[in-house]
Image 1 (cartoon, rainbow, N blue to C red):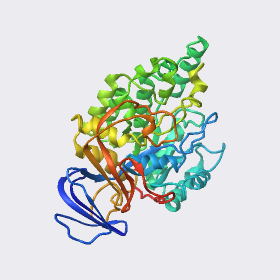
Image 2: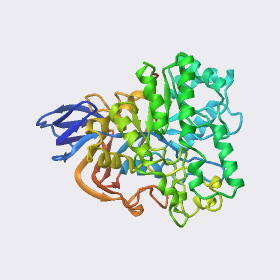
Image 3: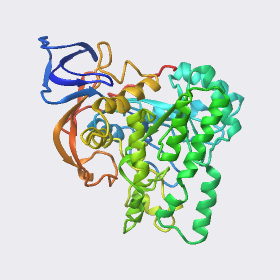
Image 4: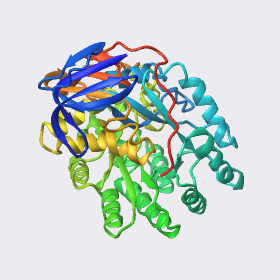
Amino acid sequence: MSLLIKNGVIVTASDKYMGDIFIENEIIKEIGLNITRVADEIIDAKGKYVIPGGIDIHTHFNLHVGNAVANDDFYTGTIAAACGGTTTIVDHMGFGPEGCNLKHQVDVYHEYADNNAVVDYGFHGVIQHVDDEILNEMKEIIDDCGIQSFKGYLTYDYKIDDDKMIRVFERLKELGGITTIHCENHGSIQYLRKKFVDKGFTSPKYHCLSRPVEAEGEAVNRMIKLAKIANYEGLYVVHLSTKDGLEHIKKARESGQNVYAETCPQYLLLDESKYELENNEGLKYIMSPPLRSAENCEALWQGISDGYIQTIATDHCPFSFNRDKQLGKSDFTKCPNGAPGVEERMALIFSEGVMKERISINKFVEVCCTNPAKIFGLYPKKGTIAVGSDADIAIIDPNKEVTFTTDKLHSNVDYTAYEGFRLKGYPIFTILRGKIISKDGEFVGEKGYGKYLKRNRI
């Protein structure tokens, strides 16, 4: 099977130029001007941007949270990803039974994803407890399963204490692995949640007030300091939402310490006023960390532009508004945390970032495609347009105008957090390993076409 993309503006993290791309047997075989090879299919991309397929490095499909299950599985969720210009996801696995080993959830998630995903996929390991057995098992997970990143939570039921986190840093330093961390101060959150509920303050805005910016900032700073103690260079802060946390990362990076940071569209484009919406609409935006002030949004955009934030992911974790979210209508602590976003990400960041001149188009590719591949062991197979790379490509029409409405999107959930957003610029083709899987916003791929990706050490 061969495909020829003609006359497009090819964009990578570092370059932008006119050219053609010839694809054969899932691989980019030639890039140049006026390529005349015979191909099974030809796309005229004149006036369009041809970029690497998006990589969403933070999703939650099939996630069980006790009182609810994420509405997207690896089939519906990756269809949404494909229709939004994303060709690869790396999913954060949910917790398994208490005391289980690392491999337990890897096996469970292969059952979920294999023969279902329509884009290529990988998993992050999940750390529920730390002991010698878990630390020893990490080598097997990296070598045999191709999982070079592990997530630890500083809050929730399986939070990891500081002494254990240092042990993880030391072990993953030996193994060349990444530690992704949910950074919030557990004690302060638990205190504030109980305080508000005891006083009868249970509306959605108290979700936000119970997880203040300082709770994130303190935890980010603490992990930076612990990583420094361990002389560890693989710390990755997930879903950064605050200027406070960003300032700690900025200070660390300027002092020569390597710290990676990720943010998400919701922390760039939505603010805490959403929690004041009538008719319990604020429940839609209960996620952790919560939405912040507009000042924090602007600081994060600047952090991306300045290079202190390396990736934009989604933390896609959809729960239905009319069913799941209503569990919190009388008490915000009962509302499942999360929101959809895997389909919206690429178009949002292109329209709100590139077209509004907050970031360059090269920076857009860097944070949505290339850096996720580099940090998480997929580059140069993924994340760039180069001869020999997988033919994962999104073609964006910068003149296509779209208004987000739930009925136009493909996630298996009854709302989008970006309802009514008017966008300029939208993916019109998504190509995975040379196969067109989405065209004009509709899925045209096939169930199970996605491949599991073993990822390399850093």
